[in-house]
Each structure stands twice: as structure tokens, then as C-alpha cells.
Image 1: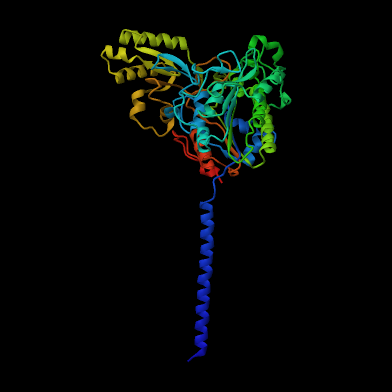
Image 2 (image 1 turned 180 degrees about the vertical axis):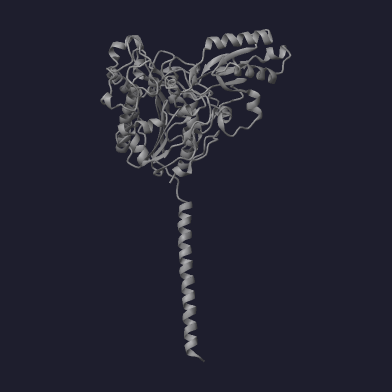
Length: 561
């Protein structure tokens, strides 16, 4: 026997066995690690805070960045995840549809909130998106509390959280506007509160949620906090530092009743009676401050985020919309309003740190729509823009109807840039609905102010995947929308010559911020396209709950840890 060769063979065999064992051990360890990652529990923050800033363009994050403090917008951007290419994928871009779409994960085509108001062709009258006379006001003797979310046909992410937790997770909605509180709160919320101004200046709710105001709301209303904002509105910082906006006094801005020009300061006490009293606060940065005050009071009053069962606070800051409509997106007033809001966000985040715990809550911030630059300003900069002459269009269209069909009654209503036909008259005249739609579409296109005109037949028969047709189709609801949809040319609006508005399918109205922050959220940014309906399923995926039942958006995987 060759002992030398035998020893070498044994040694080789031992080494092979050892290597295999080590590799097997490493593979087992890797499998365990992978299995651990796959089976990791879902992130369950104590509290989710959804923030919607009314009429916030994405570029307000970047234009005013150097003016912001470190604890508000900058904190969300630098410590959270920034979706830089986030857009609404439908039109019209209004407050009601915006809030509904953020929280349902779908578009008006599915949830049915096709505007703030719309013509209801079933009952032949205009309806408001949250109006509901079957419920009564709570906290006021006026009818301002006769609302509910019944017009929303699907569930919200807040509804799904309530269902998932057997109604143990609390949901509270807060906004100056009723629709900004009710639509995010959903059908199953513990409560939604909004600010009733006029001569009352108090937070109210609807009997849809509860029959009385809780003590903490009564205490807040009695505290005089709203009255404390009856004070002059001057700039938060030196107006000379506001270099990211236009001149202070110009022809592109509106004025409060009683003002001789649009420049700072705005004497709120002197303007009080002539401008709706407490309603005047809404059109200043103080409305957002009051909202933040009330949201902070709700944290204590409702014990939000105090246990392991996830709660949800939905907050909408509405004053930015009132200010934008009055002064326009390039105004000193808008810049100042966002600096005030930045400070209010810092207050809210600091309170969340203290009461819920750093890293124990999750926040998202977005908008319900953006806004266009004042067209008269754009025209002066030699950029194509303009206004519609509504009276002239109406007269011309009426003459067309009379000449073509012998009656104007073939059209029942024109609203929200939609034409509603009277189907009985179409049938009585022995006309084809498709042909009437096409004739009316061609007529409007001949007026020179419309970029596109779509018919209901086009919406029903085609599947658009991009561009303006895709956006219009996502806003088309067969049960509620009209028979002809009108799209004005870019930078053309049906509005006054001062201040900004919104509603179009163009980028200036669709491009809005989307920031995620806190527990379960990665730090980073993306310029990959995201859409408003992606928000709700992203939060639902993080929480491990069911998606809202009408969801058409997709979770943004880059955001989640």
C-alpha cells in the first residue's frame, strides 16, 4: 500500500467534505436571511398623517427652497423620499376630485367625484360633491354641516384601515373646506371637521359622523384661537428677500373689498366686515396656521398614535388655494403663504416627534391640483395665453343649435367644460346620438379657443394610454359625465383677468409634489413617473392592508423599505 498517496487522498477528501459543508452552511444562512426578508412583518406605524396642500405646484418646493427652514418642507425632502415627476392622470383638476383620488387610489372614472359641483343628469340639477341634506349640522345652526361622502362610490385607504383594524384604528379628517376633510376621511371615519367662518368662526362636523362635538373641539372653539388671527397680514420675512416672485403691486393680482391696491400689508381687521369676517382668515396664511393648531389639538383630543393600532390623521391645508386664486402663482402673497406653511409644517412635525415619537409615524404630502400662471402676465411676457369670452361663446353656440336642430333645448346643461344633451329630444328629432355629439364637437372646435374636443362615444369605445386623451378619459364617468368634453388651449382659462385657477389636463395643473417621510420610508428621490392614484396603494402596501376597492394605481416600490 502507498501510504503517501493514501494520506493525500484522505486529506483531499476531507477538504472537499469541509468545503461542501461550509458552502452548505453559507447557503443555509443565505436562505434564512432571504426568508427573513421575505417574511418580515409589515410596517405598522402608530400614526399615518396624510397632508394635502390645496393648489400646490411642484416647483414651489424648488422655487422657495432657500427660504424654507430646516424642519418643514426641507425635512420631508431631505430625510424622506421625493417623487419629483408626480402628476394627476385625469382632468378636471379640482379640489373635490383631487382629494378623492389621493385617498381612493383611482380616478373620477371610477370613484365618481367628477368635479366640485356637477350637473346630475339623473335628477336634472346641479349637485355639490359632498352635499347631503339627509344629515344635519353639528356645531352650527346653519346648514354648513349637511354633508357626507356618499357621492364617492368606492372605499378610501382610510376606510380600509378602519376595516382592517375592526374599527379600532381611528381616522380623523381636518380641513378648512368641508370637501377637503370629508373625502379623505372616507365613509367609516370617526369624524371629519371643517371650519365654518362667516360670523361664527368655529370647527363643525356632520351628523353623518356624530351627533355632538367632543369636548376637545368645544374647548378649541371657545379658546379664541380663530379670533387671534384677526390681525394684519404682513410678510414673514423682509419683502426684499422675496426674489422668487413678481413685484408686489401689479395688475395681475386681485384685491380684497376695500383695498386700493394688492400690495402688503393687508389690514385684516379693517377689511373684516366687508370680506366675510372669519371667512377672510381662510384667504390668508393664518387659515393654514389655524388648521395646524386644530390638527395638533386633535392629536391630544383623540389620543392619535398612542398605541400599536395604527391611526390616520388626514389634514388638508386650504388657504394656499384661496391665496392663489386671489393673487396668482407668481405673487409675493403666494411666496409668503408658503413660508408661513413651512413654519406650520415644522410645528406639526415637531409635535408628532414629541407625542408619537421620532420614527414612529409616517407622513405623505401631496396636492389636490396645481395652477396656471396668470394668463395676462404670460401674454405680457410674449407667451401664448388668453381668456374665453363666455358670453360670445354662449351666443354663438345657441345660434348653432337653433339653426341645426331648430331648438336650443337639445342641450340640457353646459358645466365643467362638458355638454349634456337631452336624450329625449335627440330621439324625438329622430337623430343619432353619435352624430349629434360629433356635430357639436366640430362646432366648438371652430371657435379657435379649444385644443381638443372629445365625445362620449370616443371615451366609451377607445382605450387611450397617454397624453391628453388618456387624462380626459380617466376623468370621464359614464354615469355622471357629459356627452361632449371641451379642452381649452394651453394657458387659456375661463376666469377673471387677475389671479390663478386650475382644472386643465396640462402640466401646470397636473405636476404636484409627492413626499413620503418617516417609518417604513426610504430616503431618496426619483424622477420616474408616478401618478396620484399610486399614493393610496403605496400606503396600503406599507401597512399590509387591503387596497381601496376601486384602486387603479400601483404601489411605488422605490419608496418603501
